[in-house]
Image: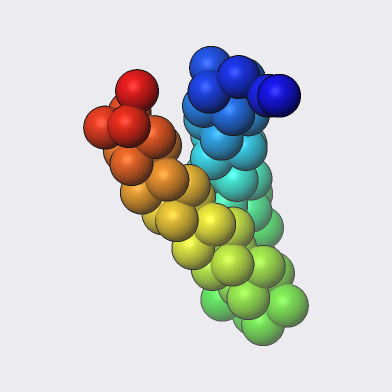
Length: 62
């Protein structure tokens, strides 16, 4: 069985990676003129927000 610490670590890692990817796309990309980059950055930001909620719920369980 997978331990709760491993699930928490993986969730934190994926949340941070998604937030960092969204930030890098917005800073270094041309999101005003490229709708594709803007859409990808928005999806990464949504993943980061959902991941933050998942981390918060995992911390209350442990």
